[in-house]
Amino acid sequence: MSIRKFNTLLIPAFLVILFAGCGLIPFGTRPIGEVRQSAPSLEGRTVRVKGKVVDSSQLPFVGTRFYKLQDDTGELWVTTKDPLPAVGEGLVVTGELHNAAVLGGTSLGIQIQERSRLKARL
Image 1 (spheres, rainbow, N blue to C red):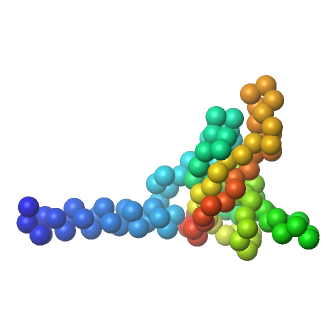
Image 2: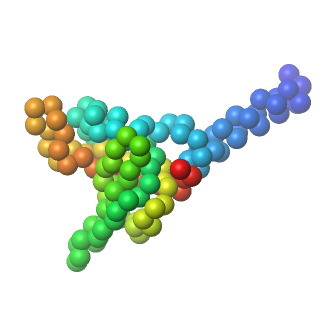
Image 3: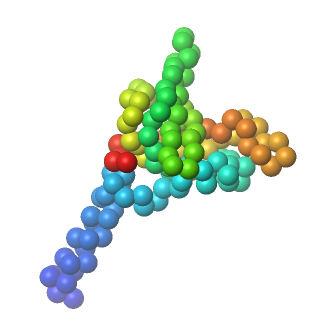
């Protein structure tokens, strides 16, 4: 294979990976509504979602920080140890999904423990 042909394959693949990592394309993310609906079966598993920060808060004296992420399909809470993102900021969040309780197959208290976040265009 010539260098020219190799470059014509490598450059587009590199750009797709780069843009996906920056959240510019929804590669590898799941709609929040789908995550909420599948939450009982996703307990303890890694999920990746994309949305806009619509609320944030910190519990005093404990240091627990959390923010609400929303897309066109729903919203969910994300807990973090890092500084809180700004309300209105677009993010791609990767983390472990947890349910506070599952009653009759319905999840209550769904949240993601943030492992990483990237700024994203929405």
